[in-house]
Length: 214
Ligand SMILES: Cc1cc2nc3c(=O)[nH]c(=O)nc-3n(C[C@H](O)[C@H](O)[C@H](O)COP(=O)(O)O)c2cc1C
Image 1: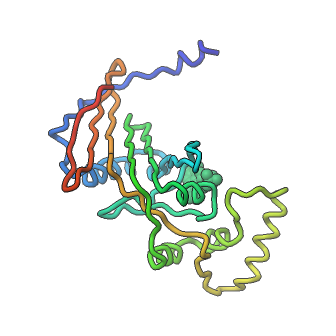
Image 2: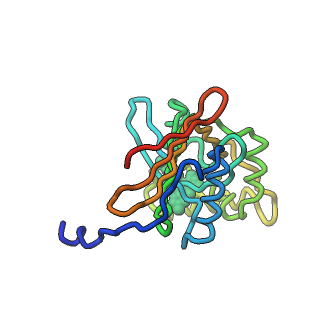
């Protein structure tokens, strides 16, 4: 078994990442990396692993989609009553990881979480395809259900509630979160596992940068 893992080993060949060449504002640097990923990653460049922890400190992680990057943070949408919703209510701290394999790049983001305003969640919800809007009503995300048929029953009940072309309003249990970072790390693969890591830390007034060992 270990033999086959050994065959998966990849070498990274990239130009070095120099702190002085990165933007002083990590949001601007992220935008550059993200734009390139949208161009070069085969699928879902905006997929990110979201890590949360519950009241006992037990961590849990899953993939969600980045839906907006505004001046203050990274926005994603979900069910507020899901497992992650529970974690974020009792412990509003989280981490995100982007892995862009085709570019040998990783970005790590850590910080505090706030809920979007109802108005912000409403505006995004209105842009979702109808099927996804109905699904948000039907799914009690993270709870168990005996079968897919049972879930189909819940979906049919929602379809009856919003017949025809009737506008689907946002369910109160569904909306957005914004992660407001105090740390962002840019990682670029390098030969012999001597990777480049540049970490930004937020102070009261500005961002500082430092290099971390691989
Ligand atoms: C590529 C991808 C994108 C996903 N995007 C979202 C998303 O934006 N929001 C969401 O709630 N779940 C999304 N999911 C599903 C989550 O990974 C997860 O199964 C779900 O949110 C329940 O997580 P929880 O039980 O930890 O709350 C996505 C999964 C994948 C693989």
